[in-house]
Amino acid sequence: MFLLRPDHRRARLAGTTAALAAALLVTVVPAQAAPSPTPAAASAAESAAAISGGLDRKALGASLDAVHTAGMYGANAAVRDGEQRWLGATGVADIGTGRPMRPNLQYRVGSVTKAFTSVAVLQQVAKERIDLDAPIGRYLPETVPGERGRAITVRMLLNHTSGIGDYVLGAFPSLGQSSTKSLDDNRFRRFSPEELARLGLDAAPTGRPGEKWSYSNTNYVIAGMLIRKVTGEDAEAYITRAVIQKAGLRDTYFPRSPRIAGPHPRMYESFYGLIDPPRDYSVYDMSWAGTAGALVSTTADLEDFYRKLLRGRLLPAAQLHEMQTTVPVLDDAGTTVMNYGLGIYVVELPCGRFWGHDGAVFGAGANVLSSVDGKRQLALTYNLMKYQKVGTDGKLEPSPIDAALNAFALQALCPAGTGERTAGPAAPAAPLPRTQDLAPATAPRR
Image (cartoon, rainbow, N blue to C red):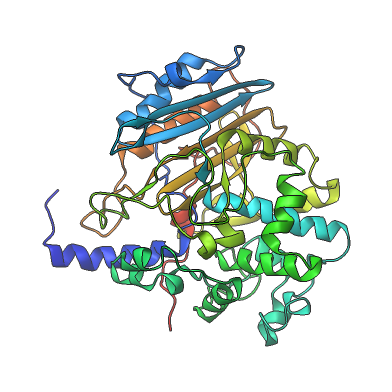
């Protein structure tokens, strides 16, 4: 590969960042075949806490170590098989001091937050305070006024078919000009939900209401405003009381300040090479993500949340069914790549069907996938984001980190001899969906 002149590379990267910035709350794991992992020098199994049983702790440790060997600074993982659980860690939590990663540290988990927000809305549906198929203008006429408010339903917000654009480029405008200056300018800025909703509603629509799936964080900020409207309680406070505490989660919370309260790693952002060396963004005012992606959690808590959710302990059966009612997610060629419900999605793997979500904020990534019955689960967090490089064609090039992450996910969820193939669409080449690839490909117009 030849090197572009800096001015050419800047022009190509500007197009790439404009296309991807609207999906900053989701992770970057390209779908590609995953090679066999290479064992690392220091075994993650040595730093793992596990319950002995059906889990191959040695294989999991070696596979997670391969993620670090491939270039990821550090990662945490939780893998469950029935009542057996393995907690592992690899790499470093702080590249400056060499502090090692430890299992089950707290992370910012980005759009994994959306499942929590969706559960809160569906709880109000169960109490008949919200109608999923009612227009959002019935509840928030000043936020979504006029014809748009009459056409967009609550369901369309939760399954991303509203056609509302994303607010992220409006909140961080330099990203559309191949600059990360606004990331630093806004590190301690306090955004209100009303401001974020206005930015998203002012952005170019991604389609007509109900026409197609199009990922937008604005949908879940408005969902948080809806929770506040019908409960009379701050949305984050309601989600904490009615969802997080109901699930019995001890290390999951909306941060009250730019700092993470508990033990955590530093979280590094590269933004496709624009930040070199990658910068620590673990201290950040997360009001820009709010009910769309501000949660802090741990791998163990994420597994526990999904297990209780899928086993019907957080929602009545009717509302859980609504949450698992999906719309197709299409790529540019019109091929269905996954199916999205209300704050969760479903993917088909060689060993069965898995529900989950992924998330990303500046410096921190997360993935969680769970079998339908909650018996087989993976939760994964890592502390280096947008580490890929941009090729001469302006597209992201596959990274060895991506292959290693996918290989670990397959080892965790579909080890040899585990499970049977379920009926459904052909399994993807890699188990970790790259939702970011499916975001709108143009920046909002002003």
